[in-house]
Length: 86
Image 1 (cartoon, rainbow, N blue to C red):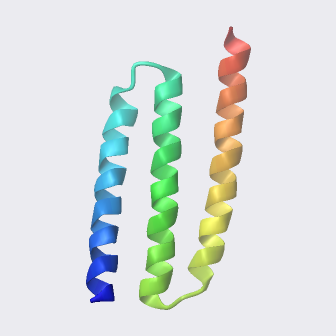
Image 2 (tube, helix red, strand yellow):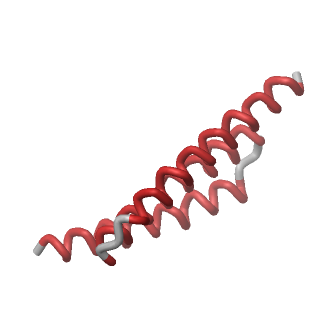
C-alpha cells in the first residue's frame, strides 16, 4: 500500500516538473522564469530523495542537499542580477 502511494507521489512530482518547465519557457519576465526554475529544482530534489528511498541508497540524500544548496545560491545570484538591472 505504501509503495503505491510513493509511486503515485513520484508520478505527480514528475508531472509538476513538466508543468514548471512549460512555465519556465512561457514566462514573460525573468523573475517568472527564475521562480519556475526554483520550483522545478525543489521538485527535482524531492524526486532525488524518493529515488534514494526506492533504491535504498543513502548517498542520494547527500546529492539532494548539495543540489539544494546550489539551487539556493543560483536563485540568490539571479535575484541580485535582476535587482542590479534597475
